[in-house]
Amino acid sequence: MSRIVIRGGLVVTAAEEVHADVLVQGGRIAALAARGSDPAEGWAGSADRVIDAGGMYVLPGGVDAHTHMELPFGGTFASDSFESGTRAAAWGGTTTVVDFAVQSVGESLRAGLDAWHAKADGRCAIDYGFHMILSDVTEDTLEEMDVLVEEGVTSFKLFMAYPGVFYSDDGRILRAMQRGAADGGLIMMHAENGIAIDVLVEQALAAGRTDPRYHGEVRHALLEAEATHRAIRLAQVAGCPLYVVHVSARQAVEQIALARDEGLNVFGETCPQYLFLSTDNLAEPGFEGAKYVCSTPLRPREHQAVLWRGLRTNDLQVVSTDHCPFCFLGQKELGRGDFSKIPNGLPGVENRMDLLHQAVVEGRISRRRWVEIACAAPARMFGLYPRKGTIAPGADADIVVYDPAAEQVLSARTHHMNVDYSAYEGKRITGQVKTVLSRGELVLDGREYVGRAGHGQYIPRGTCQYLV
Ligand code: URP
Ligand code: ZN
Ligand code: ZN
Image (cartoon, rainbow, N blue to C red; front, side, top):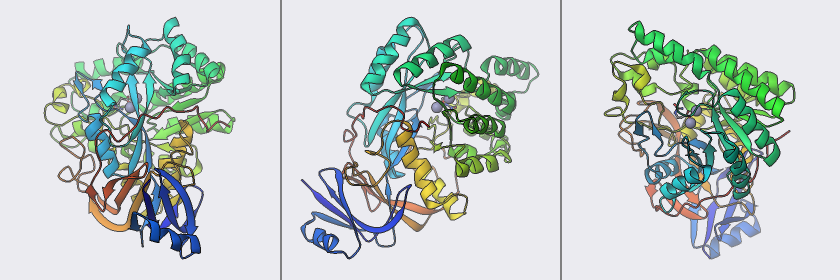
């Protein structure tokens, strides 16, 4: 049983910051001890490996609760496989992803889940779990939800957008929420009024407004807020907890804050793209704006302050990436002359921990809040805590040694995601991941990749641990 000691770092969890050495044994965190204390001095002598973390942070591995590896969407497939996407995640300090298995219309949940297991099995560099996308809510589907919860797929995404693809009407949504209330499943909602948006898309295209920036205009902030409100009230009627994914609009945050003030189990996730990018990017000249097409869409810059405030006040609990990469050449280009045909989604699984550390450097959030929103809260939200999301005896040894003083520039030339552009090209970041352990095995060692496809295991999850 290999013994690793991580020595001399500042251990940062959501709860505290302590100067401590960490002993890893048998894939788990065995103990923490104050630097220089008798036990810590004793460990080093018997360790197989001592990692010097002097001047570094020692963090729990990131938990990215929203990724789409190989998602079939918009007539193509997201360009990261489970192999390339989880490797890139590890480079960026994320050691667990929760990806979305998809039920296609007319298909069972089982068939969709099996297909996603087949894509991921034996290919991942880090651990992974699955949510289930419900595209076809029927009596059979509802019954299958109970079975999936028992098997550790404890969260279900529904769409109020994309009529004809993933869309569910209010009746189907209510029925799925009632089932979630009964079996402990967490309902995740893509909250945009897709029926109204499709009218605006048609009108924009008919008027010759075909550029990427119109993607942002037709997907109006009020249509995100309206759907968020509707989802909250449907969940309240059903007595079901609700997690609103990829929140981007100020007005949607207001709806979530209102519901939380009422004591409802309503939670919100935002993503780095909404915190750092804006409609200015969608309006970049030529067809460059296509790189920034995702849904919900990027918003005018002034929405960012409300998202940051929501993260500080806990009106928003989680930052995930919604990593859904499409190459500019050959994929985003499908929508030249018609913004509605641009595949929706942005890359980012490698960038999340660094971008949020930059927010720490700029004083937007504290170090502990960084670990909370990127590691601990997603682990608790999706039934992975304390195995994932913290550094404590008994937890999986998913550990990141992070250099808070390193300087880097984000770029497609140096990233490891399988996509030909970076949404953050040229952005300067203070801080960088140095070393990553997944269940006690080195994946990144002083910025040398030493991981392997197949190390990552499927993790069945418990139910939401965040309920009030
Ligand atoms: O644009 C996005 N968000 N693409 C991925 C699918 C989704 O709705 O999360
Ligand atoms: Zn969505
Ligand atoms: Zn998504």
